[in-house]
Length: 133
Length: 139
Image 1 (cartoon, rainbow over the protein chains, first blue to last red):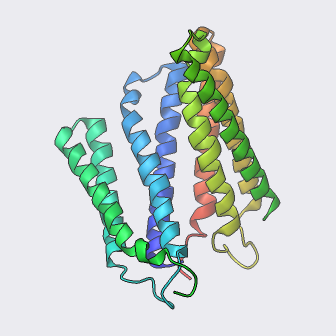
Image 2: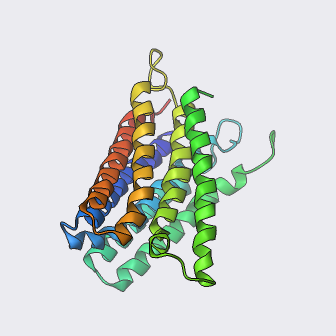
């Protein structure tokens, strides 16, 4: 497994643990009503599990297993940029929604996530090809 | 494909079907009035889909396909992986029962059912991460 995939997938696992922790706290609170402020975690719960866990895991596995050019995975710099941008975006969006840092931080986070997907596609797109090309 | 992966994947398919059936039933709210307990099953549907189907499918495939932990234990701690399967599904099924019941009954029992569901699913998530972390490594 290439180093970049290790980063993507380990971060995805960390987000899985974080998202499950947020979800468990909210579900327990739904049953026992011990801390109503836990509902504020809901947007972060959704963000870290959908983007942090699922999207990032898909990126890590795709970078690892998509067809290569001989032994090369092409120009990997955009894929590394995607790793940085998507985590910047997740952090901005999740934090802004939970502690109310303001709408523009959420917008900036979404822009970073979109840029991450575009950067990732720069590496992945040419690797989606028939065998032998 | 290992036996445990087959169990994960087939169970995830059952959750996919169940989630879509529940989505269909919840869609009837557009045309008719649903009982309160059923109308409260929106979050249950989302979690059947994303935990029962997507996450469980990923867990099964990861157990099968990720790099070997070691020559002696290629898939890490297989007992832990089996326990994770049990915890995740017990937790999710408790939610399926407890969430609609909690919406119509003030009985404390249902609150504790949800809390237990939360604990079991959380343990499953942590167990999966612990068992997978060492398999995510450079060649």
